[in-house]
Amino acid sequence: MRTLYPAIKPYATHHLQVDDIHELYIEECGSQDGIPVLFVHGGPGAGCTDKSRCFFDPEKYRIILFDQRGCGQSKPHAELKQNETSLLIEDIEKIREMLSIEQWLLFGGSWGSTLSLLYAQAHPKRVSGLILRGVFLSRQQDFDWLYKEGASRMFPDHWAHFLELIPEAEQGDLLEAYYQRLFGDDELARMNAAKHWSLWEGNIATLRPNHELVDHFSEPHLALSLSRIECHYFRNHSFIDAGQILENMGLIASIPGVIIHGRYDMICPLDNAQALADHWPKADLQIVRDAGHASCEPGITDALVRATDDFARRLSS
Image (cartoon, rainbow, N blue to C red):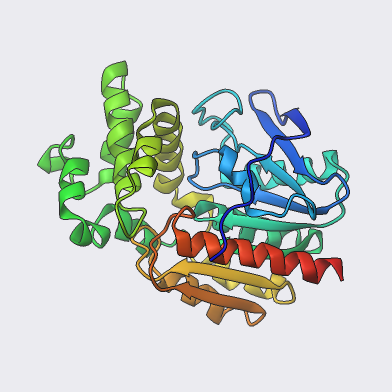
């Protein structure tokens, strides 16, 4: 079974001012002459980590990472003004132009798969391929699964913790109820709501309990950006039309892709990946039988590293 490549440091970092508010943090790792690949992180609002660099052979890839608006090392932290999907797509294109990249491979998980697909549909000639994990199509049924009924029936104990801040009268619309608390005047109440939101996701992200991942999701810096930005996006249906991604798959029908999805993914159920594969004949759907949602699960890591190695061979030839 494949594991991550050894830890590496970036050979270059950049700070790109994309408008009058937002400055993006960007880094480049691996080989300066390698195959360009863009790591598109999840959330929205999660940011990259040191391990994000390690899914790629550093001798073959020019690895580009960036923190999306409002998260990670981008500034200002957890900012929602001028933060929506169309602007994130523009940001990716600005990064490509800044780095003088003609075409690149996109590697995105969860929300990162959503954003990768939307960017590819907007700029198909700039994309050499897509590696997607834990696909999230941002349909109403996907929001309902996570914040109404679905995952709640699989994890009633963690769901009870998620609900405990919200009076019963407000539990019919948890996105709105959490939004009011995440943006209230009481700083302690905001942080408490942020941790409850983030831990709901962290606790259900893996097939088997993973205390390291849960600790990561409870870290205040991450919890604040993840909760505020996710709630902002999901209240607005990710700022895309219903069914938009699947309806526009014809725009990228010729782009090769690999879809990697855990069978027991409780954040983004497997029907997301199956629906995408049904609309994308050139994609290879790989169902990992003993995994949930997270990229750190051994079966998911193995499949992702094999996919990047395979694309390195394909794109080199």
